[in-house]
Image (cartoon, rainbow, N blue to C red):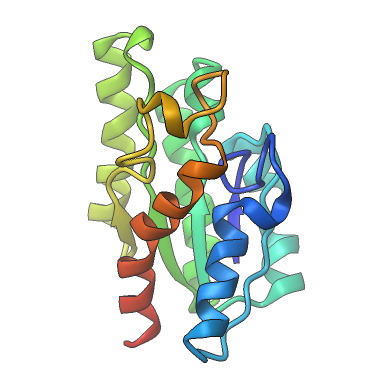
Length: 179
């Protein structure tokens, strides 16, 4: 189950062009037998996610939780302490049900300041140290900051950036699928 925000909800494009749909196709092409439930909602913060994680875990009963939240927390200036607390509670709920967690790290634009950006980045690192989760340090690697791969808002990847997002996730996820 992909549990995220607009970065995973195909914001500003057709659903079939988003990285989650591309992941679904990759899994089918590789005859893994796995299916993808996309429980991503544009605009969600970690607090929103915490409010709905229990229901989504019960509804979809995933083997793996791909957790992609945090961008909206950062863009809204939420405290890293609150963000970390919310993410810990989401992770704990998944782990309590023996669900593996793949955590997708997000970085904030430099305009949010070095101190805040470092504190925000540290949350993902601390979560990966404190819990048995797999961390992708930067989900938007090779996409964020490349104008040709981004929508005009400079925040959301466009259709051309989606295949790279899948490539950023695939090696980590594939490793989890084969363990």
